[in-house]
Amino acid sequence: MTQLRRPLIAGNWKMNGLVADGTALANSLTALTEKNDLGCEILVCPPAMIIHTVGSIIKTSIIEIGAQDCHSAISGAHTGDLSAEMIKDAGCSYVILGHSERRTDHGESDKDVKAKTEAALNAGLKVIICIGETESERDQGKALEVVCSQLTNSMPDVINADQLVVAYEPVWAIGTGRIPSLGDVEEVHLALREKLQHISNEDTALRMRILYGGSMKPGNAKELLALKNVDGGLIGGASLNANDFVAIANCC
Image: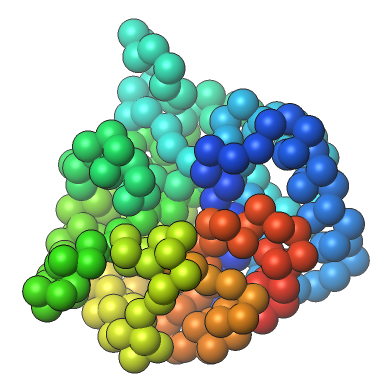
């Protein structure tokens, strides 16, 4: 981490939590972060149906709220989807796009992620763009090639470091308890920083935050967050436990 970029600790709740669960977790997070300068930005992204519930609880706290996906269209015949404008109207300030589970489960391409990103930015949302290689791609020595390609092709035409965040999540590390070596994480984040400079400019590349995701926990967060080009974390399972999530944030 560097003082140039304020760390972001974002919790991706995925498809977890009914109203009662979301209420309890939001209340716990609010209490744990009250009058506590964690030295970072805090974000939670609950399932769409409890965004309003969670948002109403954390609205007076330091915690921001986001969504886990949006459609690229403003409106129309897209049953079951939510537009970026709807997400913004629900009180969200962020949206996660291009998560590997969306890319795998719903066949989302870099082109789809770029279109959604453009829509989200137009709606006034900040975007966390997710990228990451599979285990076979890493074993074949293609990790850097894959993530840099995903980054290039998922980014909008106009790249603004104040509105965009990149999250590197090796697919094989998500929810498995396995993580790359610190050297591997550092290598990927440096490559992404250099690619950002190539597709935008030096100032933008230096100011844009690059998060690490994939089994970040209280036990390994400190060493991961200490890496030069790691500017926070996109947290999955550990974000469902208020104490664990805040412990990670405290590592900033």
